View (cartoon, helix red, strand yellow):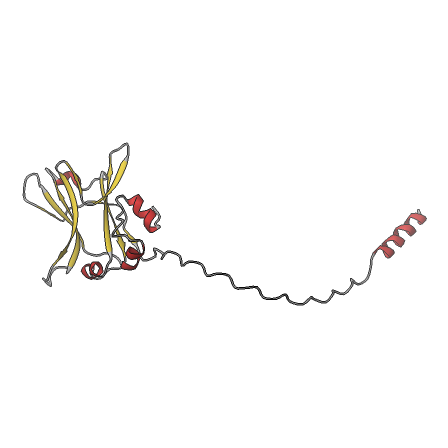
Length: 191
């Protein structure tokens, strides 16, 4: 047994080494390579594009017909735009989409929309009267009964505000996206 203890102690003392060797000297730095070609600039981002939520139509004004045949929904404040008229005159674009839900499926269309007697369209209204907003985005509807178009998830409205620089970069004026899905693809938006 003493012999085994002697061999174990001997192996332990011999198998451990002291210091590691020194690192070698670093080699010389290689020659600098040629600079690569500049890549093409990427497409402008969409950080300034404003997209509203899908919203039910709620008429602010309706005519006095029974049932009412004309209604207007005013959107007077749009985030990021203080003057709608100036925004449009400098090349900005406002797209307004209508989502129609038929229960088994839905479609989205760029306004104006017409189907039978239902006609939904948009325009900008301006006023010089200091008691009113100077400009508003107006969603207008005409129908045999416009009350059937409001307060319903069957008819939802959504707007997309596109600043002039992005409208120009995406050639939006010449390639107007007919559905909201096309707009998300063209403008790189999340649905």
